[in-house]
Length: 237
Ligand code: CDP
Image (cartoon, rainbow, N blue to C red; front, side, top):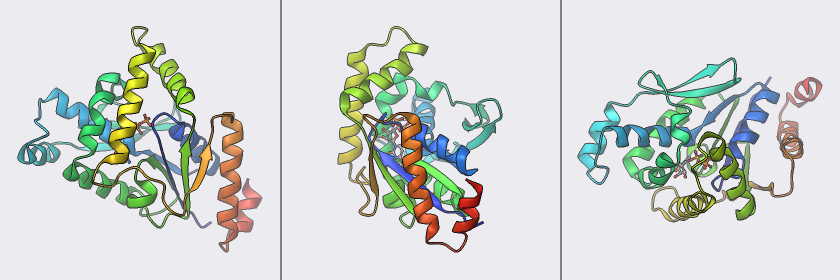
């Protein structure tokens, strides 16, 4: 059956990875969290005191970083490994979120990550979420979704997630972090966050996870109707 590429972009904490994981399960596609790559690079830089304002240091450090996604049967999702270490959980910390947008704005770092992302998508059958997936990584993706939700809802969702792991976290710092990242991500020179012209907007402020999945599956079906194998697909869903 013909497979497509699905690109999901949008603001921080608006449920991109939740939707991407749901779709991947439903369609049997590979899910790749591109943000995890920038977060893992940030972790490496912080741990190794890399001065990211120095291009030479950045280039040298990138040569020492190997990123892989390995499927975890228990969570039924890919987890990111950096130089053989599972860093899927540690990279979600606010300490990383505070620096990641600054680091993700660096051209050399984006080139390093984008090249790997494009390789992962070469065989199609992939769902990737991030900030520049529909505009830069897969500009020819058959389905592009641009996700958004009200600020207060996004802050509340991310706060709940972080609070479960660390009760010392405050809603103010989560809010500040989201606002700061959204600003840097959408104003940077290299591949800023913006809606691709052909992306469909999905505002999930008032949608349940089930409703957003149903909506996205409608779009997937519509895209596949344009392909010869649409009947095969519709039979399988
Ligand atoms: O989960 P959340 O939406 O908060 O963020 P994420 O997807 O984990 O991404 C973390 C950060 O990585 C973003 O704030 C961006 O600075 C950067 N990023 C990027 O520049 N390009 C991407 N394709 C994905 C993430």
